[in-house]
Amino acid sequence: MGNLLKVLTYNELDQGPNFFLDFENAQPTEAETAVWNQVNAVLEEAQTILAELQSYTGAGQEIREGQEGTSGASSPENALRSLLEALTSPPYAPTQHLEREQALAKQFAEILHFTLSFDELKMTNPAIQNDFSYYRRTISRNRINNLQLDAESEVNNEMANRMSLFYAEATPMLKTLSNATTKFVSENKTLPIEDTTDCLSTMACVCRVMLETPEYRSRFTNTETLLFCMRVMVGVIILYDHVHPVGAFAKTSKIDMKGCIKVLKDQPSTSTEGLLNALRYTTRHLNDDTTSKQIRALLQ
Image 1: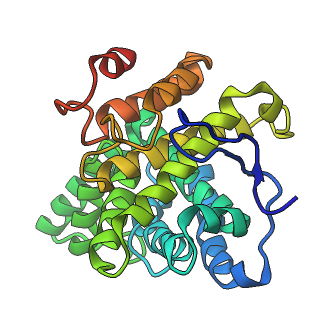
Image 2: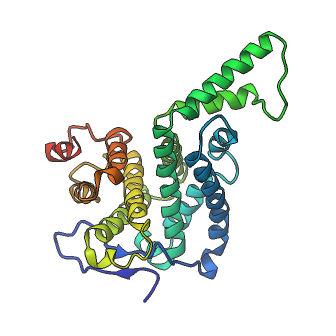
Image 3: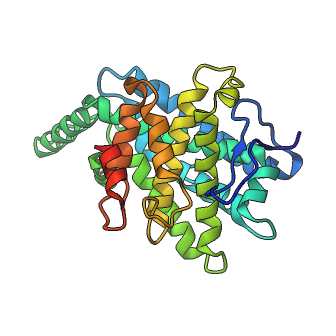
């Protein structure tokens, strides 16, 4: 049935393409394998980081791993750049890429899922940042007193400063990926910005349709796929809002923001409050004059 299954035929009122994307079973084709393998290495490490954060009860290695995961050669940031290049480069349009390269679209979704999951855990577990602050104070005091720690336990000043800046952000992974997406667009002078924003808006439409249509939701066999789909939708909205000159909330936006917000509000608040807060506090254009009062009211 093809990489992506078209589920709706557009009429004049449609704002963009709608697809059913198989987030559960997509497998890479030969053409996707190289990028898929690069991203898969990141995602395997990401799952380890999330598991450690979920079980975090005190100071530990996961603090360092979380920050290092944003800067290394196999970082989520670099993986996102590779995916964006694969999903937006000529000769195909972004929608054609998503139709042809389902496995890469799924991995793009998994990067966004990891990003929002990480930030949710960071925001709900203040011990992570508090423990690192305590660690830095201890290191400073020991140096003043000429005391030495185990070399493997000590973080050098450069790394410690980077970690502090990273964890000082309310949503550090989202900020990292937003910056990476903006940098990707600015550095690729021959790639129209519309190719990137169209890719993001298409993903948002895909997720919204799957969430609001019972027939398509019934295809999910994993109970976690619903939350996965919501996180991906919010993630691409935020990236779109950071990259597009007028953002996701303007009337000219290719994302149906009212529909996206409504579908989130139709779910249990325990699953969506963090995602709604991400739209409220990590987007750039929500408070612009071009944002309608109705959308602002929906997010209050």
